[in-house]
Image 1: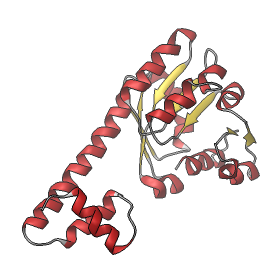
Image 2 (image 1 turned 90 degrees about the vertical axis):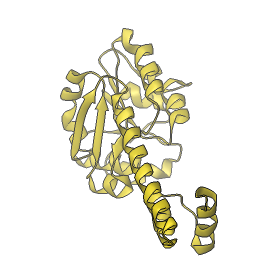
Image 3 (image 1 turned 30 degrees about the vertical axis):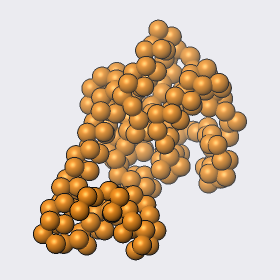
Image 4 (image 1 turned 120 degrees about the vertical axis):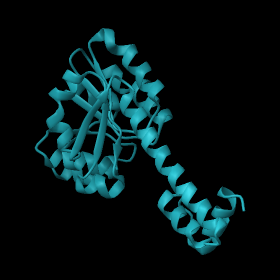
Length: 214
């Protein structure tokens, strides 16, 4: 998702410096005019606004606070948005660690999946300083079509987790209801929608047996 969001941001007319653990992931960005950086620190040093889209809290912490991480290249007035589905506690810790240096930190998880990341049809829930959100709204609009300010730092992460949990609860309830009435096939359909990611009918059956108690 991060590659697609970055490409849309680049196509929106923004100058861009990129980094990924796999340089080939940035091929189309570099061909479209982006500059390469060898570390997250170099990205931050060369940028006014930094975005990350990472698998989870472990990666967010390492990339933002680790050796050659983003914060080691930031200075007063620069802004960091984390687009990852991550921990409210972690983003608050990152914010608090660098606030005295005048560095802006906002959480901005997205909803819309890979297809939305590619098409630009994404909701972005942003937590942090409202004035900083307003200042960078145009950049956010180049990534998604529905960027919302939802509250202080950590609020975006909370909103995303609530959204995800609500969806899982509804899907699980529907699956259990269908199973109790003998409609076992619905479990397979909902498994696919939940994105548990197993291959083939046998894998689906095994996955359903692990997740649901019959």
